[in-house]
Image (cartoon, rainbow over all chains, first blue to last red; front, side, top):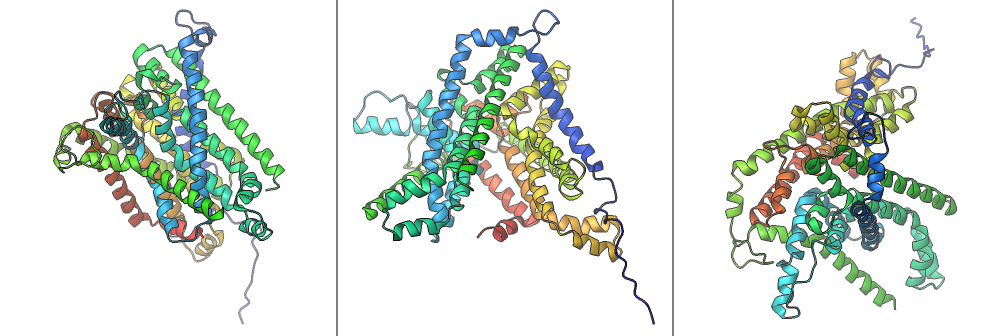
Length: 293
Length: 267
């Protein structure tokens, strides 16, 4: 009679491939170091380079902070990004609320409509807005045809055009981040408030809005950071009349060839992003604690 | 009061959806319009702009973009699986920190990554690498974090007992990778690679620094033209490349079947 020996392994079983877990990391980390870490380090180094002598200097930074044109561009970037973040959040909220609560067959259609434009890429959508907003574009020619105006309204090549275009580009991301937050709110809270006699408006003001604040914060944050680093939409819808950091950096690198200055501008943009991200995530975690989520 | 609110809410939804779809509709309409004047509903329809696409002016950038997207999605797929394997499956020492490092390029804006790559190549004198090699480098850095994240998500959910069973039954290492690991992470990997393909194909903020004459991607060619005119042929280019992206997604879905994970996961 055969004896079946059931031995429990004394060592934990090895992973799929019998190699040390770190070995497969060699290729991705090499790529990351060579294509990302070294270029980033070099860019930061170049920002301290002076054009004439060899010793590191803050000259380019002081040039940045004493140049009114550049500072105006930085201010435009911040204002534009704030407005875009606000518009994205305001427009995405009803859409996300509908998607979080709807059960009808329209839900899939509306979800697809809200997200699908992302596949079209930025160029197609910006081109669409150019056709609509241009001086001889769709809106202006319609208004002139009806006789309401005689001169075209300035809808593109300014803040308005850029905010409209960027809001359109970033809206799907706002919808997704609000959707996550709104889906986490228990629908029974709304129902019980309604049973107890609360009006729709009261339910929105006292239950849905407060509980979705983390989603609002993350939508605002995504809107701000994506807008501040966008290139194509400000370049096309803003043009020479509305320069932001991204388009100014591009000019420094490719036309003026002032590398230390370009590196300083890129660093300032990076610091702006990281600061916004840091503040946003701190705010989010504090809100989560407060709401016991 | 409640009825009024419902009515207002529906109107707002319709307006927002109109805002989302309007530019797309306008571009499609413009691509069939015979005149370069912008009219919303052209009285005549033409396919002349689509016929004009068969020209090296558009074909060359298109082929470069496709080549780039293919190389970038394959490379970041391979590198992403390796990275995700160490971090999410083998749980190598310090895997949380390494994961954060692998995802770190995400927190740097694209325009800054673009400046870094172009300054790096120029200041070490490798001007020759601007153009396609530089584009490949920059795009891999852009897409790698997404692929790592999606492949890692697939591997976190991987049931290690399946691999153990295969090993007990005598499967070799290659067989275990080929028949156990890869099929189980396939949908996650393919959705990551599809994502990489799309963001590489549509990319502007990185490519704008790295293209050079004769080696320009399709989106950059289009924006360079758009700065001067609203030529309707550009509408046709945009619609055609959108159709190409949709076709690529359907093809990838057929090969990789990644939509299964969305169907399984959603409510």
